[in-house]
Length: 165
Image (cartoon, rainbow, N blue to C red):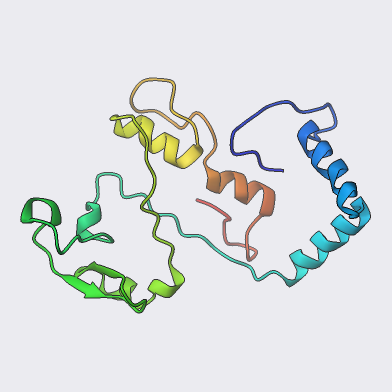
C-alpha cells in the first residue's frame, strides 16, 4: 500500500505491518481477506483507466495569468488580462486559457497547495515527491516523484506509452 507519509517499517517479505493490521481489522466488519481481494479484483477490472497530466509551471505564468484570474481584485493583484468563462458555471480562467476552459469539467485545478519554504528548488521537490530536498540548490530529485511511483506500481495505460515521464 502506498504510504504518502513515508513511514518505513517494512517486514522482510515486503508487507507493511500497518497494512496487516488494517486487513486484520476488516474481519471485525465481517469482511474476510478473500472477500476483500475479490472486491479489489472486481473493482480493478471494472474501473475505467484514468490518466493524470501534471503540469508544474516552474518559472511559468502566474496563477492569475492562468487559472485564478481574480477579476474583482485591484490591478496589482489581478494582472492585465481579461477572463473567459469555462464550461463549468461560476468558474473562470484567464483569457489565455480558452481551450482549457472548454474542458474544465474534465480538469481538477488544485489551488490549496501550501508550504512555508521560499526556495523554488526545494519547494518544487516537495510538490513532486512529498519531501523537502535536503541538499543544495540544483541537482536531481532525491526521492522518486509521485508519477514515478504510480508508474512503477500500476504501469502504463497502453503498451508503448510511458506511465510517467
